[in-house]
Image (cartoon, rainbow, N blue to C red; front, side):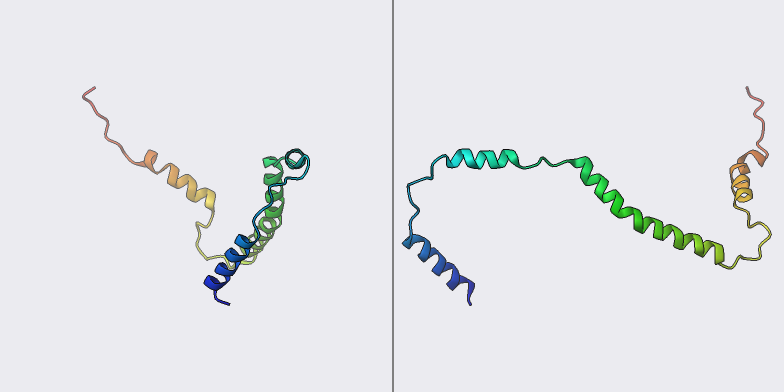
Length: 104
């Protein structure tokens, strides 16, 4: 069905049946009571749910990467130790001979 034609039919039906001026007894109070009875949105609960849902994929990724690092072939380089590489990188500036400024 054409949307424009459907819209015209719905508008014609709404115009043919005007709303009643009569409002049910205590309608406003019932609506306000229903709104007040709705539970409030708890942001901490939303965060907790999201974190618990994310825990399983994170554990699966951790296990996959751990297995990959355990079973991956190791290169045949003598300096494969990460701690030694880090220490050499951090102490590279100390090992350089810096000229002593005698102008002080």
